[in-house]
Amino acid sequence: MTTLVRPLTPEEVVALVNDWGTSPRQVGDRSGRPQPTSSYPRTAPAVATAVADRIHAVFAATEPAEQARLVTAMLDEAAPRVLMTVADGRAVAAWSVSAPGDSLLAAAALALCEHLTAHPHRLGVCADRQCADVYVDASPAGRRRFCSLTCQNRARVAAFRERRRTAGDS
Image 1 (cartoon, rainbow, N blue to C red):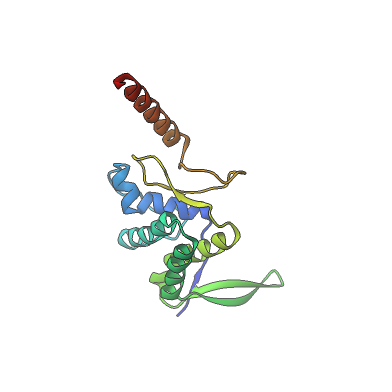
Image 2: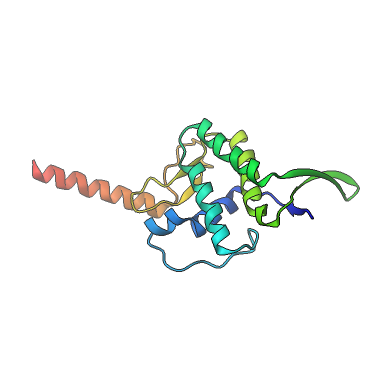
């Protein structure tokens, strides 16, 4: 039996990692588990956490070769296959996996594969020490370092206070 897989959007991948990943939840001191949303396939919390942790490693990798290796390993494990179907009289490609439990891993890996080939160097982990959330950089300059303005402001305030403390010690 095959299970159809819809690749996640980059935003859905970010939500999956930030909602279910171990590092974002521990560093951000978030208690409890979120409920799965309709934006990504419903799955067991343990599976969602395991997939999110593997994806977090892709965002944390700084070298394209390491990102490619990690995504390739996920694709090899989930083994998505392309199927040709007809929708509205047109041939369209669809993805499937043999094991339903591999659908979330395949959906995320397909999204990462597509995004990394089109937009290399546009994935990252928040640079704020109090956060481990991931982001997809869609900025025109491609220099995003924080997951949100909240984290960016917190880091700037901390740097300002450190400079003032250091200047006061002199």
